[in-house]
Amino acid sequence: MKAEELEQLQIERLNPLEIEKSLEQRSLVFIPLGAIEWHGLHLPIGLDGLTSHGICLRVAHEIGGLVMPPLYYGMSASIWHHPYTILIEEEAVFIKILKTTLTRLEASGVQKVVIFTGHFALKQLQALDELKQEWTTIGKSLELHLFSIADCPKVGIEADHGAIFETSVLGELHPNLVKLENLPSKDLFPANDIDGNSKGDHRRDRDNVLFGILGDDPRNYNKETAATIFQQIIQWLVRSV
Ligand SMILES: [Zn+2]
Image (tube, rainbow, N blue to C red; front, side, top):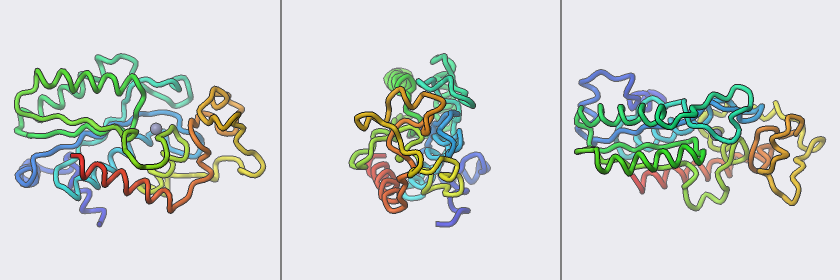
């Protein structure tokens, strides 16, 4: 698939005639969600939106539909105090943006919307669940579906924060943005996870070799495993949407 083919699925790049032509084929719009947060020295702060956007574009390429630009403002998570982390604290602010988007897409005749979040902080997932509930009473014709990258079954690796899972997913979409060389050598500075707990408080210590990374050591990144994880996510969404 060519980059231009995916660009044609980005709704912000299209004029009304192009949008109508596409939605006539399938009246479906994806809203990818992300966050701006520290993901370790090896990953960009906008990882969650980069991955959700890239995944939505590939799913739309398979099954039809268009993709909204990613919302990079996500709701607060436990790492909110780490550098370059800019999250929304107030649920009402976050939800308002989405509700307005849904209302306007509905008014434009869109029949189905899929919110796909690459950022899965508990607070955000709860807020999205509430929105979905509320939409069943306030929505008129637009059907709303909700998926989190953390819910993909059979991936074999639990979704994490800046660790092997997120590094793998981004590596499939934007290999040039994964800079494992920014992390110290694994042989000289192995992860110091007590009892194999890779999500413990020690990772919140500024001096930890994997500071701000919650999950298994990303330095074990493997291209083949990454490709499998990525394909499973795409196939899961293609089946489920
Ligand atoms: Zn993330």
